[in-house]
Structure formats: C-alpha cells, structure tokens
Amino acid sequence: MSRVREEYVRTGDSHRSVVDGLAGTARVITSAALIMVSVFGAFVFANDVELEMFGLGLAAAVAIDATIVRMVLVPSTMALLGAANWWLPG
Image (cartoon, rainbow, N blue to C red; front, top):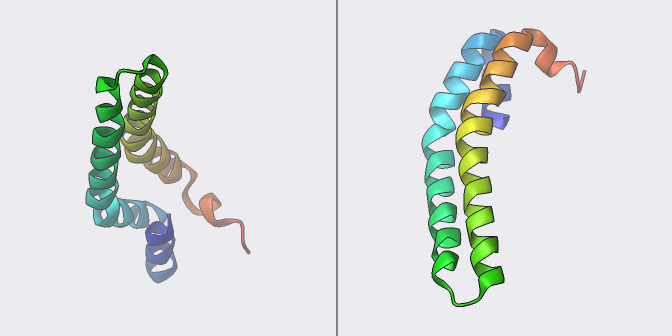
C-alpha cells in the first residue's frame, strides 16, 4: 500500500498508481507468500494432528491472502474507488 500511495502522490492518477505499485511489489509479496506456505506446509508432515491442522490452515490462509486478496481484491477495489482511496489522512 505504501508503494501505491507513493505513486499516487507522485502522479495523481489513481489507476496508474495501483498498476505501478502492484507491479513493483508483486514479486516480493508472492515470494514471501511462497516461503510461508512452504514452511507451514511442512507442518503437515508432523506426527501431531493439531500441528498438521494448523499447518494446513495457515498455509491455505496465506495462499488465499496472497493470491485472491492482495493480488485481486485490493487492487480492483482501489481501481474502482479512485481518489476516494486517499481521503484519510487529509
């Protein structure tokens, strides 16, 4: 979000700032999510059923957050809202 805000302040174009901000941070977000999914996915191979469930749940939550929420919902919502994204702080 900081990168998108920086682009918006620089250009004043909400749609372009979302595109440029996402392009600049998508690799980092995806890489971090892959690392976390791998670590949590490794818990599935534990002998403790509770640890397996936590690992599977956390891996699924991180995968959904990184793909659907951060790469689809947030950018599309920000593109639709336009300048209203930045009403706070004034």
